[in-house]
Length: 242
Ligand SMILES: O=C(O)CCC(=O)C(=O)O
Image 1 (cartoon, rainbow, N blue to C red):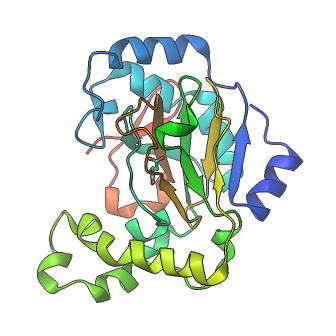
Image 2 (cartoon, rainbow, N blue to C red):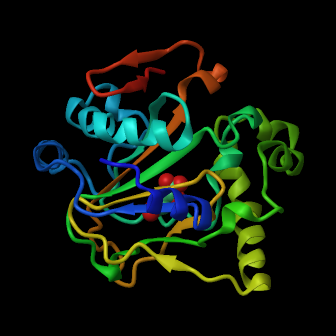
């Protein structure tokens, strides 16, 4: 999968790159077969790829990890997957605040369409160019708004949603910002987004409608001192073993 000058321009301009029909059919088919009998919300934790070989092989597909490495500038490892076949309905946020400050731009996430996505199923939405906004919420901004007890909770990202969502909704409204949907999103298409792009899993028009996708988050391995040295080298790329 080639990183073209158009891709680089889209990354700079929008903070998003869309590549059409790139995912290998055999990796998608193997994962879908394994995933089929799991409930719509998917595995209820972010690292099922540790046990699930088919997910790990898709998430660390070498052409993708090499593409991301060239784009971001450093070897990228997989450390978080969202495996629901319905929208996460996670409202507006930019992922950067979830990471320690030093990670900065050394991060990217990928939305993979495993089938043609129905626009009524709650597509991925983003604000192109929002990675250039100057009012981003970092982890320390968010921690300042949490109580001491909340900061110490492993659920702090969830607890912070109450103000992260409002903050971004207000910013979008004030700026009259354009919102774009990842539609069409057809089987094998991917969307790569920047850690400071404001985005969400939109609310489905038809509640519970299937949205057959998988979301994978990656960091530059050497920037994640917080992960220790728990990276495992797979045949395609590295993955984090918690
Ligand atoms: O459900 C979606 O499409 C959005 C997922 C999301 O916000 C994320 O992975 O950070």
